[in-house]
Length: 246
Image (cartoon, rainbow, N blue to C red; front, side, top):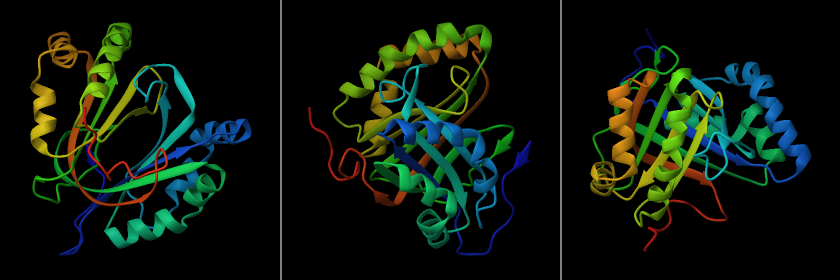
C-alpha cells in the first residue's frame, strides 16, 4: 500500500478538510451530480492538494443507500492550514461549487489517530495529540457486495440512536459509490461523550459485532481529528457553535 504524502518540513502539519455543499435548485443538483465524474481532473490539479475524494450523500442525513441529490462533499489533504484556507477560498473547483450552492461549510482538521487504508492508500498523517475538547470521527469502509443488504439493514437504527444523542454536534453519511463505499463523519464535544456512545449497548454495538464476526468489509479506515477551524455555515449556523441538549 502507498502513503499519500512524503516527508514535510518541520512545523508544517498536514491539514484535512471536509467541505459540504447544499444545492437547492434542480439545475444546480444536476450540475453537482455530473461533477462527481467531471470535477476529478480539475480538483487533482489544485495546487498543494494531496489525497482527495469527491463524495455524494444519502437521504436521512446521509445514512441510507438512497442518494440525496442535494448534498455533496469534497475531502482533501493539504500541507498546512494557510494553504488549505487559501485553496478552499480560491481554487477553481471550490469556487464553482460555491457559485451554485445555496450553502456550504468546511471544517479544517488535524489527525490525532488513524488506522486502516482508503483505496489502498494511507491518506492521513497523525499530527496532533488527542483533544480534550471538540473531536471529529471519520469511518470509511468498502462493503462486500455479498453482505450489502445485511449491512444497510443495520444502518437506519444506528442513525436514529446517533440523532437522539444530546451530545453529537454534527453527523452525516457520505460516500463514493452508493451501497458499497460508505463514509460516516461526526463531531462530538469531547472524547468522553464519543466513547460513551461507541460503548453503549444497542444498534451501534450490535452492528459492530456483526461486521467483525461476519468480516463484512474488504477495506476500512478509522480516524480521529482535532478541529482547527471552520468556514461557512450549515443549516444557517456553525455546527460547532453550540452543544445540543436533550
